[in-house]
Length: 455
Image (tube, rainbow, N blue to C red):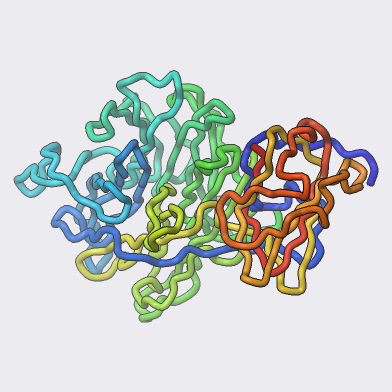
C-alpha cells in the first residue's frame, strides 16, 4: 500500500464524524443520527419574557445546570416590546427554575430572573472560562452585540452579576444580530469566536459564519469565513459551534438553516427553518451534512420561521429509562412568533451518537489510514442488532494482519455499549503495539460504531 505518514491519535477518543481516519469503505457508510424529542423544558410566559425569548446558552457548572436567554416579546406586527437577559437553573437538566434575583427592575419590580438590561440584551452569550490563567473576577465571560454593529466583551465572577470588560467593542467585522459566541479552546490554547456576517455568493448575500481568535478576550484576530467543502450555499442563521466535551479536538456545530423562499405552513409569512450538523478538526474547515439534524416534525408551530433553533451547549443528563447510561440533552425552540409565549423542548441523543459507521445485515468493512496510538486496550461505542456483530483486526503498515489480532481472532462483539473493550483470543491487551504504525480493519454486520479509543 506504499508509505503513509501515520496519524497519531494517542489515547484520545475519535468519533466517526468524517473521513479523516478512513482509507476505504466497503458496504458501510457514515450515517447521521437525529435526537429524540422529550418534554418541554421551559416555557417563557413571564411578563418580561414572551414569544421571541431565545438565543439560549446552556452549560453544566458543577452540580448546577445554567441557562441564559433573551426575554422578549413581539406583537403581530413584528414590533419588539422589550429585550432583557434572563437566567434559569436546574439540578437535573430537565426541570428548570427561574430564581428571583432582585437585580434588574421590570415594570416596577425586581422580583424576576433578569440579570442584564442594556447593551447586549439582544443576544447575550455567556460561557464558563476554563482558561487556567483566567482572573477570578472574569471566571465567566460573554459576547453580545450592539445591534448589527459590533461585539462587546463581558465578565462575571459568579455567573449572575455582569459588567463590561471594555467600553470599546472587541470585534467589528460582521453583522451581529444573531447568537455570536466564544469559548476557551483547551487544545489550541486561545479564545475562539464564531459570529455571523453576510457573505457574497454571486446572487446576493447569504447569512454565513466567521471565526476569530484571541489570547486575552479583548484583542481579536481578523475574522475569516468558515469553509464547507462540498456543501451547498445555504443561509446559516446561528452557528452553535463548540468543542465536543468528550473529545475537545473536535468541534461540533448545529447551525439553523433558514430557507427564505418557502412559505410557512399557515401561509402567513415566508421562511422555514431546521437545524443541521457540522464538525471540524481545525475550527475553520467543516464537514456540513445536507440532511437535517433536527427536522420541524409533526408540530405545526415548528413549521413557522425561526423555530427549530438549537440552544448553544450540550449537557449530559440522566436517561429517562432506568438502568441505561446517561445521555446527551440539547434544547430547541418552538412557538416562536406565535401567541404570548414560546418554549424550549429537550431532545436527547446517545453519548457520542451524532454520526456512526453503519453496515447493513449483509455486512461491510472499513479500513483506516495508518495510525499510531498509546494505551493498553481498545474500546468502541457500539450498537448492534441481536443478530449483528462487529470484529476488529489490527494490521501492520503494509496491511497484513498482525499475529493474534486478525479478524478471525477477534471475539464477536454484539450488544449496545458506550465503551466495549475489544478482545481477541489472546485477550484485550494491545500495549505492545502502542507507538507502532498500524491500520484498523473493522468488520460490521447490522451494526453501528460511533467512536473508538485506545486507553
